[in-house]
Structures are given as C-alpha cells and as structure tokens.
Length: 114
Image 1: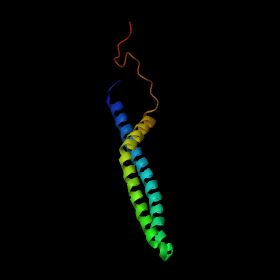
Image 2: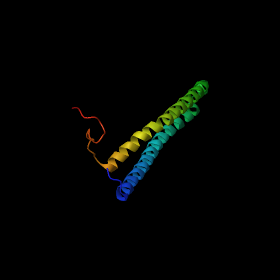
Image 3: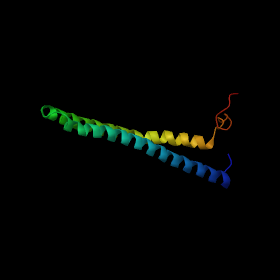
Image 4: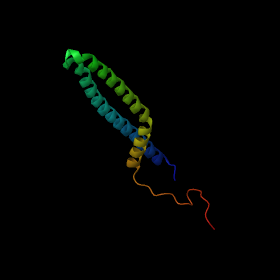
C-alpha cells in the first residue's frame, strides 16, 4: 500500500462521500418512519372523537396505549440507529472504493506453513 498524497486525498474523498451517503440514507429512513408513525398516531388520536359517547372512555384509553406503544417503538428505532449507521457507512464506503482483492497470507503478516 502506497501512502502518497493522491491516495490520501482519494481515500478522504471516499470517506466523506460515504459519510454524506450514510447521513442521507438515515435521514430518508427516519423521514419514512416519522411520516408512517405520524399517520398512525393521527388516526389513533382522532378515533375517540368518532365513537359514540358510551365507548369514548375505552377509545381514549386505547389511544393512550397506542401513544405509549408508539413511543416505545420510537425508542427502539433510535437505539438501533448507531448499528444501522455503521452498516450503511461501510456499504457506502465499499460502493465508492469498488471491489478489492482479499490480501494474501504474505501481505497480512501471517506465518507461512513450511
């Protein structure tokens, strides 16, 4: 592996491009998740207004439970974001670098069998 300025600049550009690609991918996924959840929560929030007065208390309780479940799902999605970001980043970097050959045993510093 050579370490000249051209290869360092190329690698830096590839890493920065992968970082931007990762950010855009995560932003798109987050936007899709947010719009889907907002649609569900809006429907759930409007449901108590559409039921008869006798069932309104049950509908409000169902809405509160749905909000709680939606909050738990949001926290679950946020906790998985770092791992997802790492996988997306590595994929983006591989797409920019292109296929590479596996290192030989000589290049990896592995002992050779006699």
